[in-house]
Every structure is written in C-alpha cells, then in structure tokens.
Image (cartoon, rainbow, N blue to C red):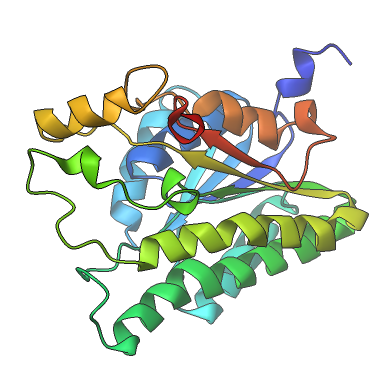
Length: 261
C-alpha cells in the first residue's frame, strides 16, 4: 500500500465521544476529513449537531447521537444504534470527560465517585463493548484522549501572577494518570484480536487564559506555545488508520515538549 493511502479512513466507521469541545471539534474534523463515517455522541446533542452540520456542508458523513456516560444502558444503546446504522465499528475515540466541580481534595467521597463513574468506569464499559464488536471483524483502533496532567503533577509556577490553580483537585490528575495504564491493559487484552489501543496526552490548549499564565506555560514548552485548534488532527488520523498498524499500548504526549523538558 502507498504510504499516503495508508492514512485514509475511507470505509471505516468511527465513534467519538464528545465532539463539541476544544479537543472534540478538531478530532471530529480529522476523522471526517480522512474519510471515516463518523458518529459523535454526548448528552448535549444540540451542540454536537452544530458541529455535524458544519462538517456535512463540506461533504462529511457525520451523525450526532445521544450518550450519557453515567448511564450504562445509554452506552449499550449507542453501540447498538451505530451497528444498526453502519454494521460495524472500526475506531473508538474516548474523548468525552466531565470536569469535577470540586476545588481541592477536601471533599466527600461521593463527589469524587460521580466523576470516577463518568471518566473511568464508563471508559472501561465503552471500550469493552466496542472491543467485542471489533473482535468480530478482526481488528480496530481505540484512541484514549488523556492529558499532560496524567503524566505530571501540577506546576504552581504556571499560575504565578494569576488567580488560577489556587486549590487544585486530585481527581483529574488521578483519572488521566489511570488512563495511561488502562491503555496498556486494554492493548494487552485486545491485542490478540487485532485491536490496537493507544493514548495521546495533549498539552495546554490556548483558550484566552490570562496573559501571565500563557507566558508561564509557553516558557515550559519546547516549542514556546500552547496547543491550537489543529494540533491533534494529524496524530488522531495516524492512530486511527492503517499507518499505525504495528503501534499499540503507547502513550504519546502531544504537548509541544512540555513533559520532556
């Protein structure tokens, strides 16, 4: 196969959880632009539909569907609906996440439990169900969207001169750190069936943060900038496609060199 053709997703069916957020929009664009029949799913279908409509006007094959990651039946219904519509599932991108509204770690366990159910337990359930379908067709690709915060502890120097980061919570660091080894676990369990599991760990996304934070953060990267609205597209297509057919169990920082400095 020609190497450039190996990056094509034509004929593949992809599911992206989320799709309307800072990362989700560009991941949806990447999947559609590479030719995949794409489903984006979350609780806020109205926002997803705006993304889907914009991509359909450019010729993309993309559908917004409901998904409540807190509800196991909703996860099962989503997989069944995709199979009903397309007959297969080749790519799963675990992107959707809830941000626990909890400053610090002086919280009742119940506060953390809900976040863990949505961000961790649902990850296990959805990956397993998708994996069962991928087994039937002899392969597939699962891509977990982590964070540099799952690879490092918080750096107070990033927040110098701002009112940010005053009382950090452990939960996001815990969940994204756990995703690192879950990626290896799932890659080991699903590998014999030709299913690859990898994770990417994006760095800070520029979103009009205070000038002091941007300056501090930029200085901690090797490229001297934060992530933009297209920085994840290439690595997503690579991991979803046959171009990465011998790559599994990896955790790839996409952070401008932040975690390597």
